[in-house]
Amino acid sequence: HALIGWYKDNSFTDEWEFENDKGYSDMTLYAQWAQADTSACSVLVATDFTLNEELYIKVPNAQDKFSFLDKITVSPYASWKLVNDLQGGEEVSADSIDIAEGDNVKYILVTAYDGLTHKYYKVTISRRCIFNVSIVPNNGEETIVLHIEEDSSITPPELIKSGYTIKKWLNGDDEWNIAEDDVKTDMTLSVQWKANTYIVSFDSDEGSEIEDESIVYDSEFNFTVPEKLGYTFIAWNYLDEENEVISLTDGTGACANIWNIDTNITAKAKWTPTIYQITYDNVEFAENDNPSTYTVETYVIFNDASKAGYDFVKWQDIDGTAITEIALGSIGDITISSEWSAIEYTATFKVGNNTIDTKTFTLDDTLILTPTIPEKTGYTSEWESYLIITDDIEINAIYTPIQYNINYFNIVEVQHNNPVNYTIETATFELKVAEKSGYSFVGWYDQSLTIQTEEIIHGSFGNISLYAIWTAKNNTVVFNGNGSTGGSMSNQTIATDATAALSANAFAKTGYAFAGWATTSAGSVVYADEADYTMGTDSSYTLYAIWTANNNTVVFNGNGSTNGSMSNQTIATDATAALS
Image (cartoon, rainbow, N blue to C red; front, side, top):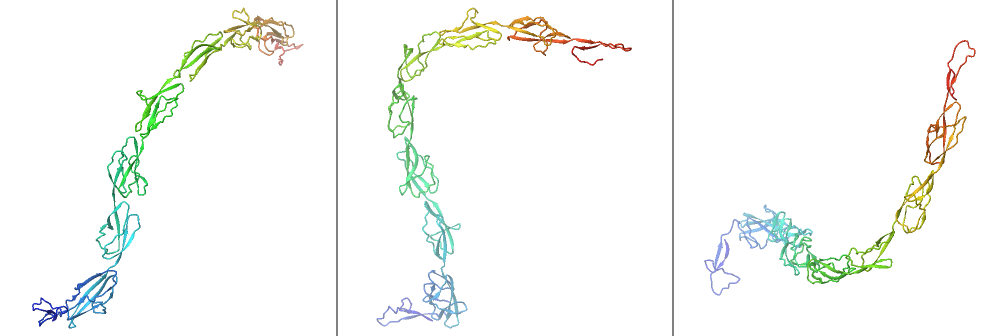
């Protein structure tokens, strides 16, 4: 048996503690016994761990040694030791053993009091490993490698991605609970981010009110465009932390970039005064220094316009109401027109130095009513051209000499160098003699052919008709015998363009008969004997006699011949032929 302890009563409920209890009188202590465990099948151990048939103990990675002392208690009838294997081999010091990362296996051998009974207990001491945990931040930064002890959760590094919050951690495709899941091996964790939503408030700067909007980071956006009377919306802006103005949208409210502001902001409307047009009517040729545009912030006072030939009256609207200004705060395009009063000027009409009439006119007139111009013989008359200008003008009568025609008749094939027109102002000039082949010029006469005109006197006027009077010249026909052998002929006189019978031929040529007259010595007959001849314009013409050879007879005489005969042979005069 084994002593369990001493008790003050025999029911073993009040144990005597030798260190603390004291006796003050006689007493009886009762021993409590337990049956000894001769099989060595149970071991009493300390509270650090419970030793069963097989025990698995994990220790921190920082612990590289382990002690079994004060951890194992066996029954009084048994003993124990630490060995490396089940064969009861080399005993290991239980005080301090080196432990490597991972499992370190040892055996506790318990031996009963009889030395024959044994029992082994397997103890695995696992020193936790250090694993490499790669963190892929997905925020533009490089991968972070953490060294995490086995069975420990991960204290993640502080990761920042502007405009985003970590949605979850992923181990491959599986979600990883970063706060609770323990690391069991090397691994790679990636971050999945969720874009934050920010609130944009709007300051429309006295424009229409715009409600707040929620904007997701890195998204496109369009803001409502406010309205403000007299202004054009330019953009939504905001001031960043450095008081720099950042433009968020264009004038349509469309985003300039994706949303990249990681805080709630207030956007302020940017306005520019709307430019309105001022249209001026009835200002052609006028000087007008008034502005062509204005805005709601502009105060306009209209200046008078100026225009040559007119007095400015007023600016007016379409209803004729006078307009002098555009009040501050006005909006909209406007059209105004000018009213003018035309200035009167005087036109003086003069003939030479004499004034014959005056008329008034303004620049609105297209012409001036002119008086009748006094007539002047031999002249056409008109008022000189003028311009409607901004001053009195003088308009003079213009007299232009009429150009009269001088018509010449009976001048076919005639040369003369006399003028064909003249005016009343032309100086007196003599008419030149005309020339016509075969004729003598008598003079220039009127249509009646009775009054001769030798000169055109200065101051004459009207168209003139002049007729040339001619006297035909007597021309000579010379007769050429052209090889005649006898006779002669006197020249024949015939007036130009006159017709007369030619003198009868008086020439003769032996062996020839007269055929007629030719105009050249070898020409053909043009005129028969005593034919009519019309005289040309030359002073002399020659006609040539044309002759026809006679046929003559050759008579053959036998001159005593006793036999034969021959016919006569005909041969023309001066011709050569072989005799028969």
